[in-house]
Image (cartoon, rainbow, N blue to C red; front, side, top):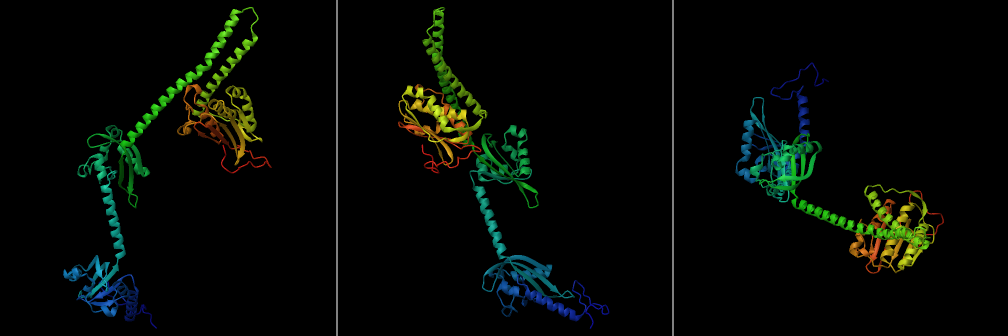
Length: 541
């Protein structure tokens, strides 16, 4: 059997781009395969028309897209796929005329299915001619682009809604710049803020919105460089309106690139925040005035507090000097001298404590507060402080009790924790004079808890949040004394240990200050230690 492609039989040829087949049987086979392929295509309606426009062939895709079976549509004129208004205007014949003239027609438009529903079609009609150039019919390929059409319309509607939204926004100036910085769009907010109408500003360089000194420094071009390099530029600064007035603006410039990465321009959003700026400046001015008042009040209080121990110290030293001058050779009254020296020593200690508090505030402000941690017993330290202040407690009529049944161990700075307990106890003695004071030390939920409770004058609710601030005293009357630094220093020391200090107070009924300290690094509760009552619950004052 001879192969269709045997060299002994030369292949037939066709001109004008026709397919060449080796033998008639090969041509028949190829024609059958082509018909099978066309009929199997479901995503395209492929049909042929005779020269008059009547349908000659129909594939599976045409049935799926247009709804007609081949026996229903063969021999019908292709105009039935056009909407009625297109038929009235003679569009089907106009399309064939175009194909006859130009060889092909491609368009998108509405077409009609068998059930009279519309679909958006991509249509290609091609003239088919024989080897002599005579028209023998038309080939038509139709694809259903309805979903794409709807998606495009939704996108256009979305873009239109967005455009209308941007155009009508009043609170933001939203506009576009070309790659050189010239204004290309303008919205209502931009007109309201900057006072230019669109026809006045489109095409102008956006540098005219900058103050002259910024333009001289090249700031507009720098902003575009940063946006191009980093994707966006953002700042708050002064901008200029059409009338030359300034407004404080929040500005964001975003670089816009196409899919290939080429810079297409910039989106610019500006908001007038002049009122916020003015409010912020007023607030800062108020804070400055408050700071000046606090400074003046502190200086007044500090001068008074520093002078208070100096006066008796000076009096006692003067008395001692006169005693020595008046009795140069006589035996001096030892008991009286000892009494005067003790008064002088207490005043020197008081003066030293005031100065040390000021130095602590300075250390804290400069971040130089250092802790010297070592193992210690909080309960034992609390007993030492209570014992040390027993004479002062008796002097002001306070009975001080301490509840500390077991050692409370941790790694803390003993001197600093001593300072904390001292501050809290002396505060209680000052504001709770004549009434009982109760200290309690315990472990609770893994924390060492120290509370100091008095039954004194209490702290107003509105002032409780401020008592830990520097130079703030629970009571401002000078007869209570103090620089208003003790609680501030206490809080800073406790927080440096990783703990917290809190206050609960009722006006006229007293206050409770509670310190909670973590045991510190490398400290674990002693094995077998009994759990504290209420462990795991919030600390009770």
